[in-house]
Length: 382
Ligand code: CTP
Ligand code: MG
Image (cartoon, rainbow, N blue to C red):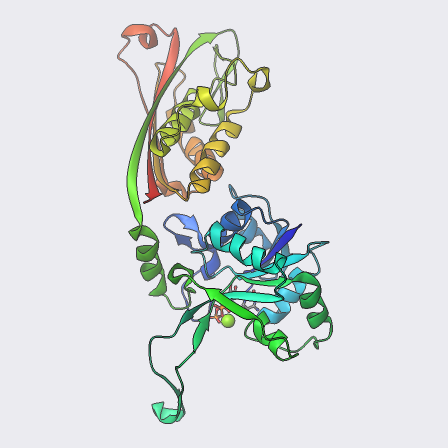
């Protein structure tokens, strides 16, 4: 059973305004687009097709660095055209979910629930919330033209899940120029009613600039902030470079270790695991296992970030301190921050890399080895 997702992110975000389209802006330090792709991937959805504004595919790729793999295709002039572009790439999937990138508050649980409804025989299912306010239709100057019955009225969200075959056939039978608010409306125009299940307030769509602060508050409210600490040290040995925070620095010595001996990232992985309450790096990647011999520490860091996501947690900020007499860290600090930010899918302003010496005291002072310590601040759901 294969569940594909189309994440439409080809809009211009005119009502949101400002610089880059809203789907590429940062929400709590992570690009809006990345939130949905991560939730879909965590729910086992594959393939994930991201529909980007034509000519802005590179921005979509950049927004997804550090996020699970997604295929990026160019969208169209309307949301309907963008979904059509995505539909051509879903392959043999039997279930397809269509989701607005502008709704980043998606949870893997809801994705699984929607897909399960289709697996159980439903044709079209979407999350929806009851409307609390009275509804009216207005004309020019705010004049009320008519009242609408609120009784039974629901505000429909995304992802909208479908029997893939039915949605593909509906699109094939719909003219290229036709535009609908969403896929449920398109199917309704063809006599397929669909149904709704309980929606989620956190799935609100970012439409106006003030929505960002509202959603940040909604997403932050059910979390508690945890701080994890990590430490690691490696001995110097033969070699011509050291790798610290993912950056290779030429040196007259190398670092001895089972993996690539990147003490900075090892300390950081332990800090993340610590904040999650999930043991330490040795428990996840035993040095006794030959699989991890000479391993690139990027794998360890990506794994720690994936564990955080799987726990519904969000890495807010990380801070690494490298402790060595030599090599000099300063010239490589910004590259280390950028690499770390990229792997964790964070904005670089949420990543700190610092360095210090021990004033020539102890094993570090004698240049027998170097050490690193790290702190990770993580918002965990309660
Ligand atoms: N969308 C799309 N292709 C379009 C138009 C919209 O993929 N031609 C996507 C948007 O990127 C968004 C979702 O459809 O994720 C919902 O649309 P909306 O909130 O209206 O976003 P925008 O069209 O970007 O915003 P605006 O209407 O204010 O310009
Ligand atoms: Mg729009």
